[in-house]
Length: 82
Image (cartoon, rainbow, N blue to C red; front, top):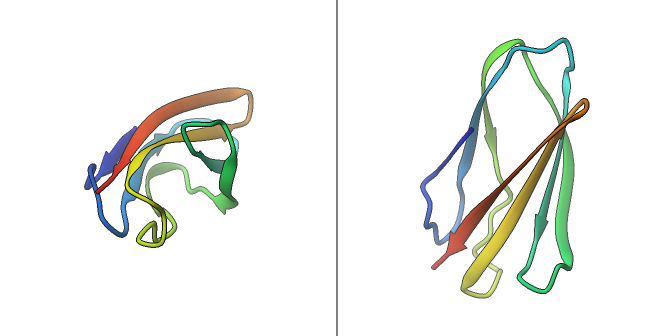
């Protein structure tokens, strides 16, 4: 899983390879206090997917945590907002 650009001041893209039969991605963004500030469900294709993340230009500068769930698999990564 890649997120770029990171750091960002407005939008980023998540790039991931879907090799499972699951076609839904649950995406959540949390602030450093653990408060969920955004969530969405995206459809995935088999193979390479590029999923735009919500425009974060309205968020305060800082570190955010992105949680992704595809079926039973969960991934977490950081996003830095300039």
